[in-house]
Length: 369
Image (cartoon, rainbow, N blue to C red; front, side):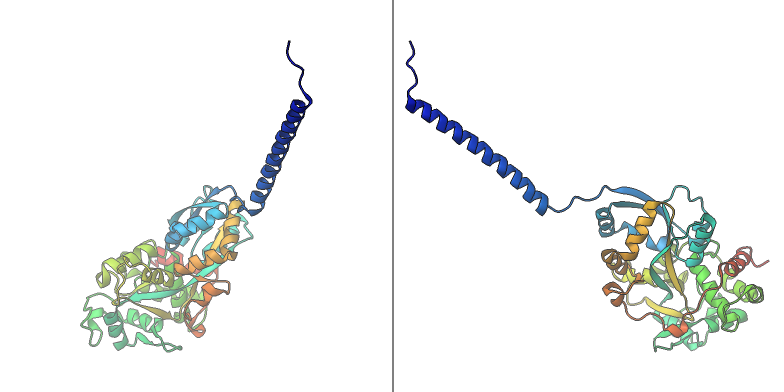
């Protein structure tokens, strides 16, 4: 027969049970406290990432391909896939697959907004048009008066003189003292194809301003200046669809194909930052006078496209990254302040209305017939 438990053993079991319960309670409290501390101190989880596709001007491809840009967008819940195209081409493409379009010009963006009934647009950065050339080419052009000091003292390419040289059919080998590039072809600024690309349309805008007596042309004036515009484009021969191709031709083939190429300032400035770009001290950047700013304008087609537009327009990190790629942020701030002054304000002109510009582009596209 088992012995009855003594009061001492009963007391020990009671104490053990109380200790166990106390330990369990402590563990529960510690677990709750640990979870609460983690909840308060742990970084917030990233939002779910959604993918938005866009059709963009080719000069922005490297920006969207930048791993830092990809990471910054992902932290804001966006994965962006892009396809490059000329800005005028973007305005006429089937846009059903895309959540946004991001041409290089406000006229192309305005057409898309009008055609699709979109009210909102974002212009987070801009780039003045510029002329990529070579020191000896600049010297030869200076001898003909086509390169001169601008209003701010920097060297500029005088569009008025280029227009006169084209009217006269002046060849490179007839420029006084030109031994650097004695080519038997007309002195012309190489551009992209105006049927597809915004940069060529911007050249048409500033050249028509000059041909119209330093005034933005209306429809009637556009008809009068067309012969001059056709000389600037038709005699070039082959013209690539995008500035990315034209700038690459300038870098790789040099003066043989593009002795002076109309590009975006951003393309040249970005190449300065890439050691393998091929840019050397034998590449120089001038500004046409007069000139225009290309305002890169994002038109959202879906709510996610609108999220991207707002981010690019307001996020300081993305502004810094855009500046790293040579784009001038629109909003004031450290990223914008890091740029040297752009072309003198007195040499920046407005572009014609969308309808007038399209009138001239259509005529040039069909060979001015």
